[in-house]
Image (cartoon, rainbow over all chains, first blue to last red; front, top):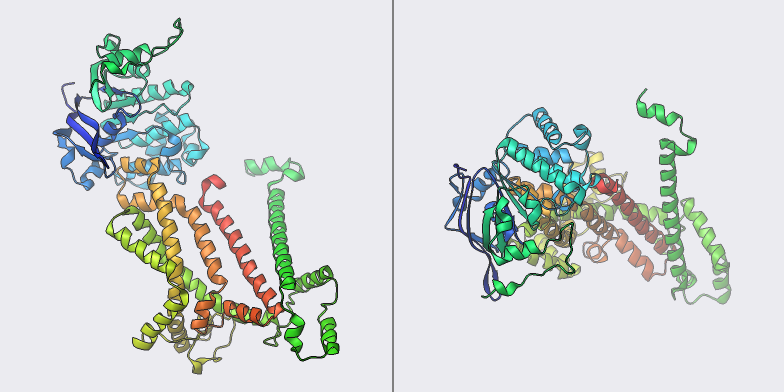
Length: 278
Length: 354
């Protein structure tokens, strides 16, 4: 963790509304090395916005501000849109939630994966094709030659997500943001997809930010965990120490997870009065 | 022999791929004929129930009862309605649309003359509408709410709300009368009239086939203004629809995916967002084109254009039922044809519908 891949200080994402500006991310700070960081929180806690603000893909009228937002010593807020494009995909990439919506319906899978590579490297057609097939192979897709010619509606959700991963990893970025990569998938393939991301990240020595609402799932695939609530980080700890978490929100979330040997009649709900004092 | 070929040999006749293709084609033709028959029936019966007496239109209102009755029998109008209908259908399928009362010629010959005039103008008009309207819609959506979008939207609103005859007259006064940039009404100048042999009926094509460059340029100069006005009308509709389709696509996750990959914005726009909207756009363009092919009575009147819109209107006012039915059939056939063409294009452009 000596090398800092990402430094975030006082990151804010602001949306103007009729009743004045509203911060959906309220000044959060964290550092990331070539490690696996999980950002956990409920819907609307600002975790996805955090991920997208690193790529500067918050759409107007949303605004991103920070006292420091550096990736590999590059000031992300200082980059022109063109410079940002050179970073996107090539150095920072993002796997999105649902392959049903995140893959273009009218382009073949091979074309979409190849485009991610061609955008950043000027390679002959044959070489692009070979790299695409190789990448599909790496995400454990059988018969990659056939799959490359298929359209997104012709593959299953789990396969779609592996294709998404292939597309995002083919230009060999340094940082991958996985925004709820498994929440649209069947439980049976969730672990498969996470194992795949984990294996490739470790093998390529990349940094990973995995965004999720599932505490237990994430604990197995991250080194550190940030727990977000209402745009703020309420807890930061090692993944292994999650059960010793201090903040009542984290404890509440953990307590609400049902166990296999469940004996409670009713699962506890969150008592927001403990931290929602403002 | 390929693997697939070897496999199909053992299949029963009904499962052979070639047989399935033929069945699909037969089904397609069956639906086509049925639609056409329906159209024929509706126009025929509407033509018979409207309170216009086609016999009176022929003999005039001073004719004696004997002449009236004789003419009525000669026209076959004394027979039961469904017998008349089947006789008419039979005639239509042999290419006989009857004689026009007002022009004294065969309706089929009249249509061969007026439809190409409309076809020529409508095709040029839709071409202008698509070439300008689609990019306008795309950039309007890309710059939603910015000044470019506002300018395009106001332009579209003008195209929507300005009456055709007004813009036609103002256009003529300005570009023909005042500036002299284009030629006036008609398809060519009067002294070129009838000089080229009407092989296709399309003045631009016929003059080229005859090698008459002078007439070709003269025809261009005549068609530019009315075609541009038709183009402006379809542009307004096409740009507005394109804009709303594009806005919907730009909100899709796969557009964000493209941006995450670092794809340049014009590729995001024209590849990732535009390619998926081609299918709904074809519907919009097809319907606009069909609408133009119906013939714009206003524009054809202002520009003395001998098109089908004019022909149909005159026929209707003269109770010239054969001409009305014939022209309606052509318009209906155009709609059916364009619809079928759109269906084929859907299958080519959308992998999900294959």
